[in-house]
Image 1: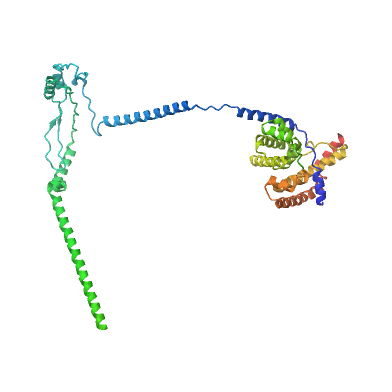
Image 2: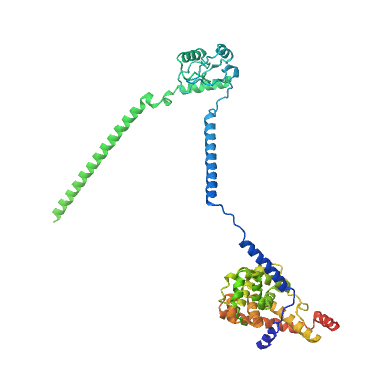
Amino acid sequence: MSTLDLQQRLSALRTSPPDTGFERRLHNALLREANVMVAAQHRPVRVLSAPRRWFWGFAIAALAISGSATAMWAVHTLRHEAPPPGAPLQQIPSQALPASKPKPTMHSPVVPPPPDVPAQAEQLAPVVPVVPLPSKTGQTPRPAQTFVEDKSQSSSLTNESLDSDSVEPPVPELRRLDIPRELPARNLAQHERTVAATRTRPELHLPEHASGKSVERKETATKRREQRRERSRRNSAEKAERGLERAREAQQQHVRQR
Amino acid sequence: MSELPKPNDLIQQARNGDPSAFEELVRPHLDSLRRFVFSLSGTWHDADDIAQEALIKAFRSFGTYDQRAALSTWLYTIARSSCIDWRRSRIGKVRPHEPLDEALPATAPHADEILETKRDAERLWQAIGQVDEKFRVALVLFDIEGASYEEIARIEDVPVGTVRSRLSRARAQLQEQLNPLKSGVVATTGGASQLAKVARG
């Protein structure tokens, strides 16, 4: 088949395609599309006016700032109110505490506490002897202490303050009562052995300023440094002399050769 | 495929989103556009869908039509890219060319002529469907739709020399496809049954 024949046959295919309702479908589709385009053009775009934008901006910023400030305050408060790690939580019996009263101010009359309160507190406050543990450094252990609220002092203070019309009435101080745990006999013996072994070489644990060793060490270091400097000065002087001698010899040799 | 001068007001109206003006503009190109898409898709059903999609795209972006090229060239370009998109969306679902006995219109008055025309057209379309798509576009646009080399080059975005070589290769491939078909189709049962059907009706 020649190319011409082929072209003729192909051009014969240029007939109208079958009627499948394409034009009608296209017409409807175009109308739909036009409606969509018109709707998209006329769709109102909601834009906030400038004052509203400012208002909402400030509101959001204020909320953010106050939120972060609250969070920081909460963290700070929690951190400062938290008991030290390892401290046993001690709940003071409510009867031992004086009834909470408003703090007297400069202008408010000071009402003395009822006389039965200290006695009651003394009666109810637990008296716990603290057994001191021997320290590792071999220092003399402190005598056994009993952390009991000094009622007489506090009451006297209260009286004094009341007498002198003090502004701040003493608030009874709440001390943490250290309740020692009893060590088992085995642990205690082991601990004593450890302490005894430590006592044999107390200088290891003594602070430097106490033993005067740091001063000695400093002096020694200064001496060594001076010696080192002296030695290096001497060496450099020797070297210089040797160099001079060598130069002189070389000069003499040169003169001799000439 | 000469472009008749279109009144500028129609173009302006179409740019403003008037669908009837756009329809007026594209109506002369609808048949050739559908044939072109059919040559790439294989069925008239798919061809209609793709052509409609391409025309909707053209309507949507008619504001970008700068009239430097003919409207038919612009439409062919859009149709070509729509065909590529359609082909990508249907990877693995390739359908063969549908038989043309229902698709092709009956133009010849006598039954024998009708049958012969149909058979020839079917053979040809089947053979065209076997040609490489890259070469098929040039063949369909040049030999069937009557586009020029320059127009095809613009549609395919290739140099004119490439169009020429593609056309030559397409013709060679088509001839290779037609020669065995010519000898085999007459003896097929399909051809005999069609003959009997036409003779009855």
